[in-house]
Every structure is written in C-alpha cells, then in structure tokens.
Length: 187
Image 1 (spheres, rainbow, N blue to C red):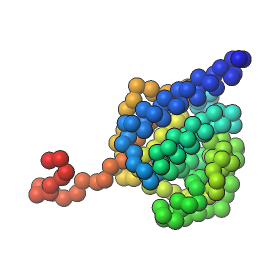
Image 2: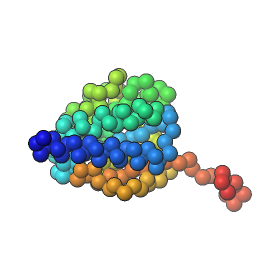
Image 3: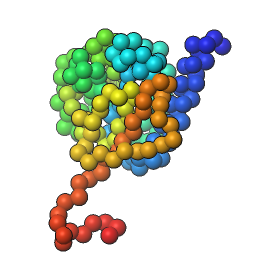
C-alpha cells in the first residue's frame, strides 16, 4: 500500500471512530438533522479553500452516509462561502423541515469538495439557503454555527483533529424559558 493510500485509510478509520463517539455523546434521535461543514484542504494540512480534495471527500462521505442511515439521522452539507454557505440536503426533507430550495449545483471550486461529493452521492439532492440543525460536525473551522439551533452545546471527545483539521462537535438543546417560578425537568 503506497503512502497516500495508507494516509486515506488511516483518515477513514479515524473518521469512523469520531462518528461513533459523537453519535453516543450527542444523544441524537431518529429524524434529527446534523449539519456537516468540512474543509478537505484543512484535513490535508493546507489552507481552507485552497486545496479541495475529491479523494478526501470520497473517503469521508460513505462512512458518514452509512452512520446517518443506521440512526435515521438527516444530513445537511454546508457549502463554502462562495455559495454563501448554502447546504445540500435530500429533497425529501426540504418540506418537512421548512427548507426553501435555491438553484445552484456545488462544485469543487464553488461549494467545496464535501458538498459537491454529497451532491453526487445523495439520491435526490437539493440546495437550500439555511437550516436549523439539531447538531453539527465542523471539520476545519468552516463556521457552521449559523446553521444550528439557538442553544448550542459543545460535545467534547478525546479526538480534536481529523487529519490536520481542527474538529468541533456540537449539539443543541431547547431554550430554558420562564423566571423564578419556572419548573424544569429534572429539578
């Protein structure tokens, strides 16, 4: 096995481990939406937006789709800033989640490797302008926060990087509302 293949194999194994730990730690439920932001450039140790890699996206997408399918989780793949961080989702969830489709097809240079690979792999992809996801995975500091529900809670695991990219995991929770007389579950 050559060095490049060995690196991709290691990356895939690391990714599968991250997904398993995140799934257990985030308390995700069937039907929830997880936003994925991924700089394949950063994964390779290069500057975000400068060295997108279809090979890296290909190695990450299949385990991610399998992981989500097993759990009944929906995915939204964030595009890069050249597409105003639009997202790629399965068309079947656009209606139930109240998502407004936009007309664009992501590419390696406008959307990024992960979003364009998702476009190829999803059964019936559509681009949408925004989502309010229940959780998120940010690989390479792609800034997915704008696509998460309002109360974001970090999910800490022992792995802080995927390849060379900084890894940030998050889940959300409902807002606490009320005042001194409010009663909350578990109190």
